[in-house]
Image (cartoon, rainbow, N blue to C red; front, side):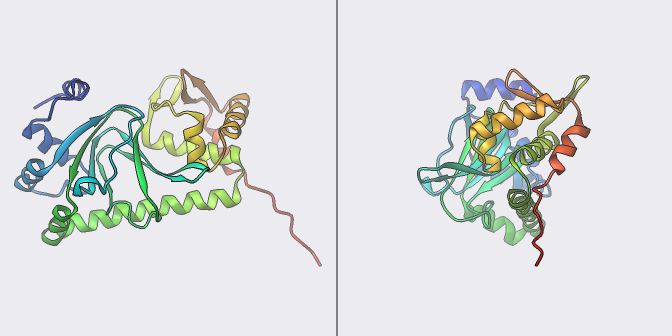
Length: 255
């Protein structure tokens, strides 16, 4: 048995994981948790592990023929680059999930890149290995379908917000989602652990860095949130939820 503290130290030193550590981490991956231990051990032997520091961009899935990432621990931003227009975030993947050629199918065309938002531990597998798993273990296939369905639902919510909410409301909605996925509860409220930059937040709600800064200042002035050492703290959830529900007022046309 090993501790997360030991694992973090191992990650920082760039040492390879032991087989026991890999098996343990694979057992915590949402789409693989139904596999028997012998299958997990087989995956662990075939996987290559690597650690990435905050802000580091992962190699493209197409490189080297390894097209599936297993995010054992950490948090990764999936995004696409736009010519002369920066980038757009597709989703933020949490530790214990997968992404890559299969995992992002249906999330849009174009070259999808991945960036570590926090120190992250990633294992890579060839997609044919996952295909074999799907063939012999229907529970894995069902788990992947559920994962993709949830990511599609989240994408639909974000698209609806772009059409019906102004930037402050979109930012408030984003903060609530981030709090739900990575928030840490304390006496002072909920803290979003990742120190997102205003530019990163902007890529998630299709807004400029300056617009995010203004909107965040508005939310702070209303007492909904506070930024401490670049981390967002939710101070009044009710206020934040009201701001998130604000919609664009469209005046109806009458003949």
